[in-house]
Amino acid sequence: MIIGVLALQGDFREHIQAIQACGHQAQEVRRVSELDQCQALILPGGESTTIALLARNYGLIEPLRKRIGEGLPTYGSCAGMILLADRILDGVSGQETFGGIDMTVRRNAFGRQVDSFESELDFAGHQLRAVFIRAPWVEEIGSEVEVVSSVKTPAGEMHPVAVRQNHLLATSFHPELTHDLAVHRYFFDEVCK
Image 1: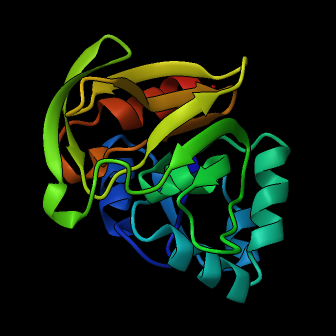
Image 2: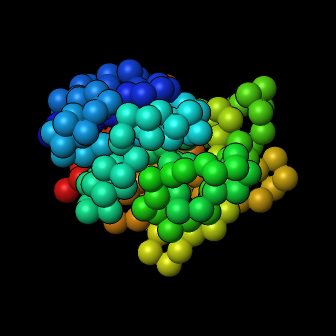
């Protein structure tokens, strides 16, 4: 498969390495012509408002919304989760998303950069170490959204941190920053099929 990675800002290089380690071809996406070559797409971690602004400047907002809406398998990590959300809490005024997942996401839900942490998670039956950096969490999901993984907050509440809706997958953590390919393989083997 040719897996595109939105390469405007953020940790897209780490996703490219994970794609290649899983035996697929990676395609950096900065133009509509590059997006058109992709059979699936990854939206990387980074700064969601910056990624959306750059996507607007590169003429990618509407093409991305169209391809995602038409069924392009898409995975978003951290900022990518925010970009796949239909609704955002604590966003900046006028913040845009590509949408697709019927969920409400809270930006920087776990706190600031200094509050970043790692946690053991059960992700679709696989135990992994998850890296959370200024991460969002899911506040609310629609009836078609499946919770793949949740984490307990410092206040003792459980919040989803990995969700799937049909051809879309989102995590609030960064599997691309570890050597564990379980999330990427799940995306390729389960979501993309």
